[in-house]
Amino acid sequence: MGVESTIVTLASDPPRLLRPGGVTLEQLRAVLGRVDVDRAVMNPLPKGARPLSPGMKYKHYSPKANVIILNGSERAYLDYVNAHREPGVAALCYRGEEKALRVPAVCYGAETDCREQARELFEALRRLDDIGAKTVYARCPEPRGVGLAVYNRLMRAAGFEVVSVG
Image (cartoon, rainbow, N blue to C red; front, side, top):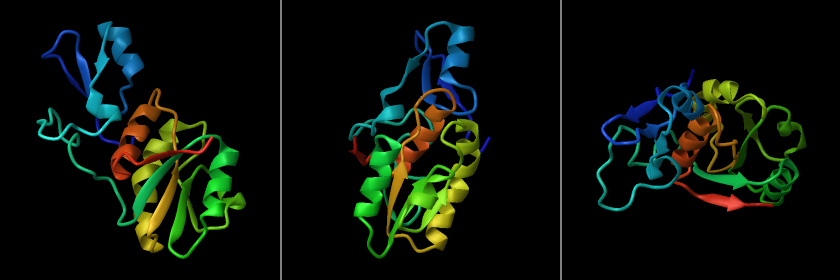
């Protein structure tokens, strides 16, 4: 799968998703009915809050570079990255987009295949270290299905730094 397992707490009513993974929120809801998503899946854990699951508190899954998620269309992403080209800048993109980028790029799967993104994400983050990236502009995945797990891991790698690009 690439991303770690799904973690759900049944200690609350309704059950609550603490960490998305290969078992999707939609699959959980098909079996359990209502399942809430813990706020820490999509947002940083509030200061002083105790994490309920591994991986909820700290920035991790991250290369040494500063990762910034760009949320917007493919064209807006490409334009933004190319406009911010300078030494040390790299892109974490979907397969095929690297052809239009004027910075070093590492792909982490097809835009339409979140399972491939989940399998490729951690290796792609390590490759960014290998190329010496200092700032990484990452393409934002769709937060549904397994894409929610990819989105969560990228958000943590970026320390929840997101720029809307249109």
